[in-house]
Length: 498
View: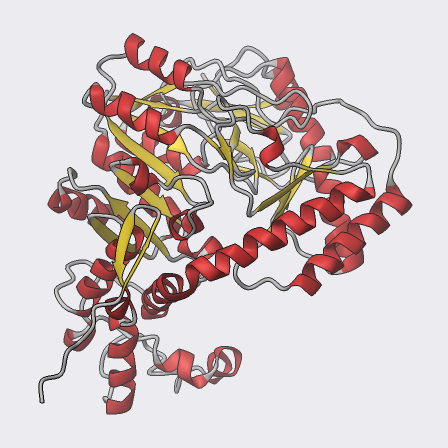
């Protein structure tokens, strides 16, 4: 009797996935086979499946520690995959509608830096918004490329930086026809999306690559009602934080490639900075999470979107808060909005975002993603429950009743347009001196200053320090923002170029 195997496919967001193939998880399955073999380890890691570190086994569990193993023939090698890792990466590429995908174990930082190091060399120009993550500017320090900033508009009420206006991107391209690439945050931490398709077309018409920081957009690939994804828009490369909305272990990410990118060169770039001792816990989590998204992502993100919209409605009914959503879309600087992001403006009731963040954590045992000068972000994803949403809403209502005060608009904006005086690389490696921060106006900064999260530099190497920036930094520090980057941990002094 002839057995007919049916090919089951799922079509959404302009891509077709072979669901039967997506049921496989090659790295996870190889680890399961390996675990049953009871191989005697005379290799690293030195804890020898946990026997040498019982406290670690107690913390993480025997099965977890037993799978913390070294690269070997049956488990493949991330530096040059030829078997199970290679197969898992191909499945990831198919699930995300990419030509190629790479497992990254250095977080999306390593994926972002691999994109920029692939596209740029010393002296090349790259067009990008200034409200990028610090990993982007760190990559410019490493490769010596020159940033051409498209300064984003700032919403006058909620104070956040918006997306890249297509007209401004086109202007930057026309003024810098020798630029090799354009870099886009999509979506931003707050959920703001640019017109990605239009930006990709502008870049490709001029022979420029399009690189997309999609750290906060893993889910965009798995529901047709969410904003367009980078691969769907035709981008050349995208960095994906699977560990954020995708459900994998912290520090595990993907690098996605379009069809026109030289894969062999990208692999060489990745191996410049990525570890040669990749964690199989991270690799297997990427493999399992990709399978979960391919099989159940559409249903999961339908639920996530519904929970976020419900939370927005409930929070806005409290008064004093503004949980913004698609109502702020304007077709330009806010081309679209990621409705899974629960971003909430807090200043109308007299509290900064960081103050609300601290109250939620210290008084209500609720840990949200971050609070900044004007906003909080509660990250809602596949692991959340409606009862958790109810608890958050109740706590916010309580905070308004107990702690609200007269509103102040001092330092409402999260973004101050920089004055670039030197490239990040030149400034970073220049001779510097420490100067009291209040005396640095007019000087050129030689280091990073940022609130973390979200990790967007207030100052980057090579930018001129102004009185407005000094005032903003001191205000953010006073309000309790976690300030990172400077050599002086107390932020009393800044490193400036001599």
